[in-house]
Picture 1 (cartoon, rainbow, N blue to C red):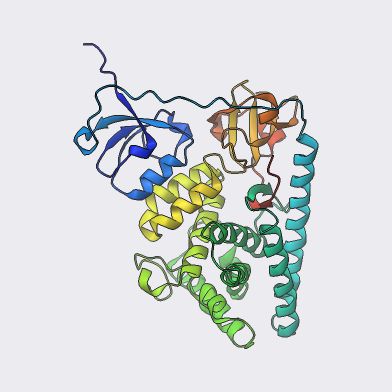
Picture 2: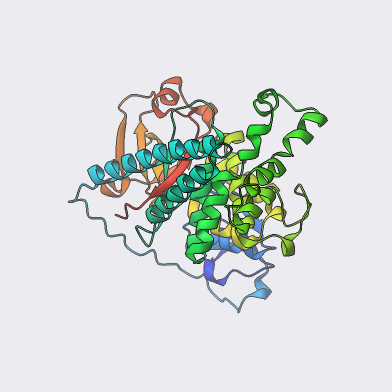
Length: 399
């Protein structure tokens, strides 16, 4: 039997009810399979974020205007200026982001240390840090995310707080929230897990499954943190709401109060989403897999609009993703760019040799596919430091 040729339609024509096939391999998108039944607007937004100009129409032709012939999609010719070597500037910008991240981690640790003995000092320290974060976010109209690390094998409460703040602030920036709200999001993110410091280390650092008693104790950390901060009388209500409710979900399945969407502030919903993604990231180690798990199994917990914004911010190859390039090199994505298939990367050959920082637009090389960690050689794993914890910070390099 002759193979039926599917019709191509522009992504702009997609509507709920269609069944489409993505012109991508399964490693390049967060869906279960390449054939997708469109049942939610967020699915359309996610496909639009995959850097494809068309999809194949499988079913639902009656939902579209009559198409007599396949629509040919013209790919715009990419203009690549290979005469300018932007690598030194890109490397410098990543180094600056790393330095800013480490300073932020140290600053918030200082704030944590003063919250009981010198609450006013703690507030001044963290308010200054928030202003630094806001300044770094708004340095450019189009900030990007870059990969950073504290060099520690475990992600601390403070390191996690900075990374959640960065993602949350990027979401707020994309939504054009007032700076007051962005500051509340930042401050709430920084302190959202401070209550965990009242949870015994034997529970907080346990590697295996928690008992019911241990799990219930750990779930008290939002209450512990809220009580600790509210007692100072210094922190704004919106920030305190984030600390108390950052584990609430719009479907009512969260804790401690099982709130639903109508009763959760938007700023709190933003931090809840960023925290959920960060938690999955540390569980699965791979940014793209964490994003896929979030979309496939946690989509009812967060609003479609916020998830679509998160997808836009992270891109299809978030920083920390291990990929194969079109020249068959293996690489770790270091920083997102306007062209999602040509990020800045740290690369090596399949054996781990010939390490180098690469600015793909200069080379006209693209990401070919995501690589599973199990498929990497020991040399490549060592060169790319694939087991290092992943955190994010702002980067305003826009070339």
